[in-house]
Length: 334
Image 1 (cartoon, helix red, strand yellow):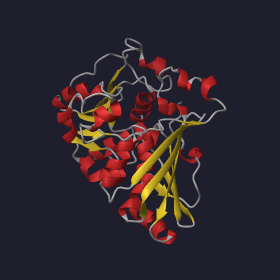
Image 2 (tube, rainbow, N blue to C red):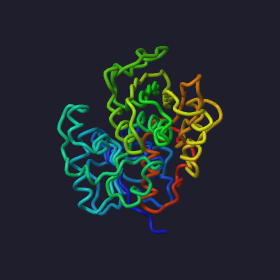
Image 3 (cartoon, rainbow, N blue to C red):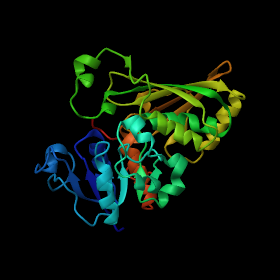
Image 4 (cartoon, one colour):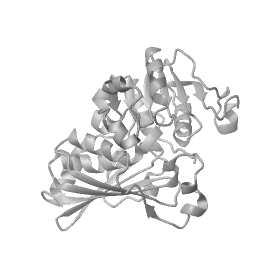
């Protein structure tokens, strides 16, 4: 098997580190470069003591790569993506830089103009359950956000089948690792421990991704999305409420048909807990109701299916590997 030469930009954050752990065990991958400005010159073994990686962190990736996992902050990797694409690499972007197709949305949600609007038309939204065929030929793949992954997978079958009412409420809760690895008061142990709170009440940045993708499968409902920070390391639980336009049996059948044959999104009989999906690339979905109000829950690991695991899943599709390659074993850290 000819191995794909892969680099990871921004390998010091949670998404980058998770990508490295997954790619290091991929039989079809040769890791050829890891970048980090804060770790420049340090050997990989200081950060990945259990992985047999030789080399040291640099600030730039080498030329001649087949693929780049860009785990850089928003608005940082967009400019670099152009050079990587020109060099012939396929780019799997983990930031929000290419998720929204409309450049006019970026000033609204990210308070700045998009640095490379001409690339938006080339980007494919990296949610395999909806876009597998497009991902196969994509050179620029925008991996969805963690909240949006859970919400879209929880709602797409109902919207596609016309079984969801016009108004949807998404109550979503995430572990602290979803905020990234940077130090900040909002994720300080003393601030989050034994506490639960909602945030971004006025609108979270992942909301336009949800609206965009639901519009692609049916008549997009109005969505009220409220995220919460939970004092746990990893995991997301999205609980979605909407008026049921049909029977519960029809809704359950729609979900099972929509996800038939999908290796990672599973319809389960009981409401899933985040621990069931933790350290895996699974999305576990349960369909239930209270009277004529549907209650659909989805549980994912925010760092795997909600980030780098989904990135590797897209990489597998794009390079012709089995979709589950390197994704069947647990990711142990953090």
